Image 1: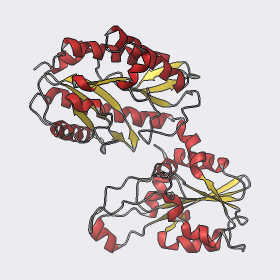
Image 2 (image 1 turned 120 degrees about the vertical axis):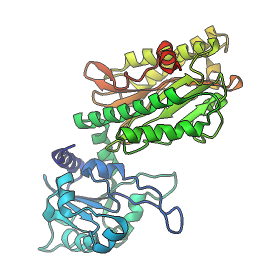
Image 3 (image 1 turned 180 degrees about the vertical axis):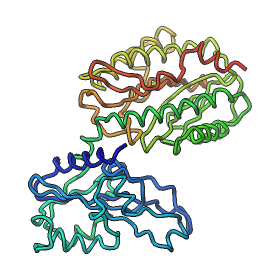
Image 4 (image 1 turned 90 degrees about the vertical axis):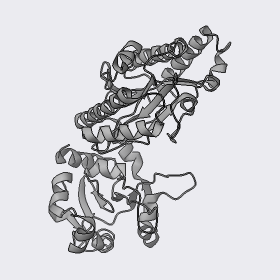
Length: 421
């Protein structure tokens, strides 16, 4: 991505803000997992979308005054001490080169409080704008009934200036993030290509007697070897009965001969996610029963993908997918009435995809050109130890769709041929 794109995003973000307002957004930080270690850092997606910066504790300020806006960035000082203990820190010049924010508007983090008080909220000659009446914070909640992290980080500002009206920045950013740019789509294509390399490695090496964790490790190794920075979410590598658990992540069972292996996995490219599901036989050959269920799921996968276009809603896609799966299961004699399908299919047909695996976007709104969604029908029969899910990543275009993951094999004959030892 180019810094001009991040500059344009911030300008569009400012347009969506109310008059006489400013926004405080943080990149986040890695929480402690022990006395002397932290969890891996995962940058706040809204902050990354507006800056392109993947660094801890950075703060972005966007000021709006009339039709004009101003941008400021606060970063950790690249001290000798930090460099020796933690590695090279990003300089102001480097942060400017990525984000497009002028070097003169990038300051050390320890000056943030003084800057907010004296240059934004103090009615003086030093102020950049008229004293703001609105403050935008990222009010995303990790859990229900828990204070948003964005509010916690800037609680001191809120407490000190109670006259400020709090607004949720996510409403503004989400509307921008929903439609993907060409550069975002290119990153998602790369993430999918990395994922394909990992899937091929799993299919080529899988065999009965292995443990699921071996395939889990092989996937992560393969995508990183291909160039990915890592996993877009925790890998699901579920064999046999484990595949009937929708979000199975234990990945610790031995793989039995004759069982299917359901993989739901994805790689990252520049923080953009892939999300792919493929199901295949551990020994490389589908049984008759496995083929019946697999062909049903594959048929629904293909038909729903064909229906993707601007104006279609997830509700319509969900209804069609449910009806098709129910009719198929009735033909196979597994159920007698449509409502019984809920025992064997218990999730939506798909979701938005982007910087987050379950990305921003309302399922109530019709699809638009530029959004990326998943299509992932499945059937899960616990009593038979059989689970099948097939998932592709689809770009909605002006006149239909583009299957971004079409190169990842999913036909029965293709899988068996590829896995032939």
